[in-house]
Amino acid sequence: MATATVLAGGRRPWHEALEHGGELELWVHAPTWPDLLAQAGRALGEQLLRGAPTAASGRWRELAVESADRTSLLVDWLNELLFHAQAEWWIPVEFAAVRATDTGIHARARGVSAGEPPAVFHAAAPHQVRVRDVPGGLEAKVTLEGRQ
Image 1 (cartoon, rainbow, N blue to C red):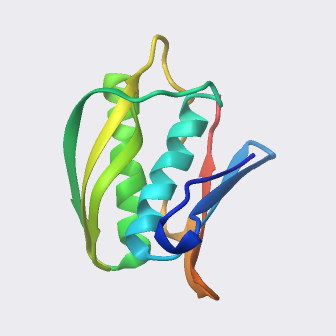
Image 2: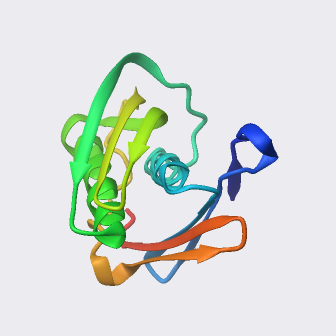
Image 3: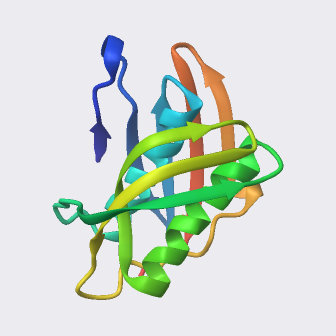
């Protein structure tokens, strides 16, 4: 399933999730690095909620992550979101005021309180993530294991 949000200038971040053999691949495309991180968060949230319709509610939370480089930052960002989902049953699905460098992200997030445990994934590892420049922006591929 692919999902997109329109940005200024008509360029759209989008993502696609592909399941095969106990793995979940998230393909994320966006015009900028901050947009890619936000779209990766939306993609993960959608999968954690098993595709159920989502409407974020409640207060905005401040989330910040620092890491060594882009690939590590994307891994650590998704693992931070997984932590909140698995520990609190709170799944971030809406992101705003995203500021990101190659080594850090600060964003505001609103989410959904899950009524049951969210889908379970093993944390992403750097060897399971690829980030590259493509015409019109960036593309990332993240492989997660262990969907239940």
